[in-house]
Length: 240
Image (cartoon, rainbow, N blue to C red; front, side):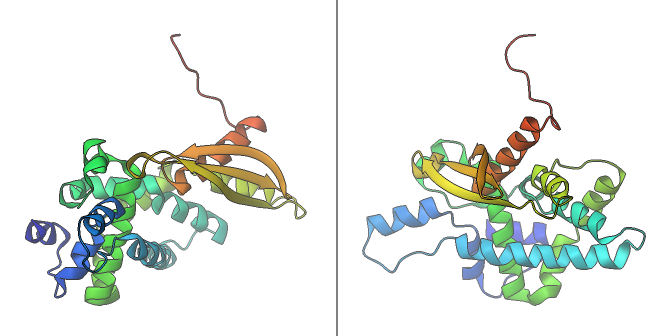
């Protein structure tokens, strides 16, 4: 199946092991290790870390070269929208990435192949694998297949709501104010975790957020802060 994926992304891997690692979720790696005494199977978590930086760099370069009528702040806002979890999930869906992932049984049965946080992380890992196997040109070619369209949409309106950036811009208007996030807990099994994050303004706890990933929890905490400030409407629940 990896050949099929390579056709979709336009790159034939010289090191197929790096591609497999990019597709290996921690749940699968942990189960494989538990079943045998072999060498630990590496998951895609470290690749995800690298891919995040490669994606940001390629996107930043693209924005710098193609948009000359926006100041730094506007470019930062556009970048935040096109490298967020929702944007990565959109890319993953476009190439059907979930089909190729190696997942543990629990994650498989709980719908992990379509979970946004897992697909977004795997997309970052795939970008890192492309970078390590084919250099920056390979990573750039893949990223620029999707980013330009998202950038154009972001310029014309709102592509994805980035509550963290919105809150940061508001708070930065006062130089004395600072924002920080702290993960203060997680719950649930590995295949269905919930992360808890507290948002601090000037070292004082201000709001909380829960999500299936740390990024999602931080976004939810920022959204809650905006609601408390009266700058975002709270979603209604129940029948109208």
